[in-house]
Amino acid sequence: MRTLPIPQISETIRNGTHRVSYYPSMLSEIQFPRKIKSFIRRQGRLTAGQQLALDNQWHVYGLDPNIDYDFAEVFGRNAPRCIEIGFGNGESLAKMAAANPEIDYIGIEVHRPGVGHLLMLLAEKNLTNVRIYCHDAIEILEKRVPDDSLSGVHLFFPDPWPKKKHHKRRIVQPGFTELLSRKLKTGGYFHAASDWQHYAEQMLAVLSEQKRLANASPGAAYCPRPDYRPLTKFEQRGIKLGHGVWDLIFRKL
Image (cartoon, rainbow, N blue to C red):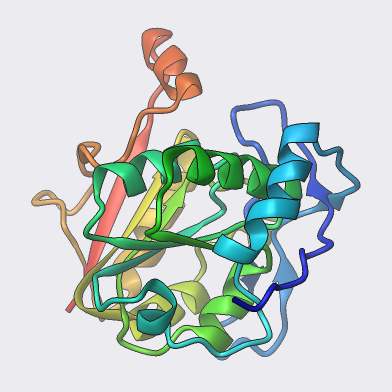
């Protein structure tokens, strides 16, 4: 098996919440004439275990962003394929992959310590249905993912960029929903979750404007958390304190 170089991508900054990293994305108008970063890179520290996992497991699970892969060949089978944008420390992605061995998952994250942590989990659980990009998510979707190929795209707790002047950096914009509508299969879904009500409201409005996506909620609003999305420790604490979490699921027509 050919060994891929470990991406030298620096750690993203913590924002004081459960988010392990700012989520990788590039935003733009529908035709993507310009690109606006929605993440901030910072020099980060790897634990000894994370570095060991990067050294020993990257060649097993890592994907090179410069290569066009046949993903059926990568996974050794034809199976439903889901992408998670900004998987943080990888806990939720590893749990989903273990619970759904019939689905192949591609995780995308720019935060190297988070990538290292997910590699540790995958090796510990001996999971074979996950591969990882340590790169910008929008660039991967645009350049490396075939149209009409994805069964699902997950975006769990993206950076809300709460200041009004930074709202343009939020990943869910019209250009992003246009990209989703191209990459998802007919019947494929996009699932976002946020604990910021204002951002959830904005996502609902933007997604509802995309004619090729339909809200899976009977009330055309938010959905109950599906069983496949694991509760994070932070989320459980927030729920006990009365904090809200909003899940949105839209399917491609």
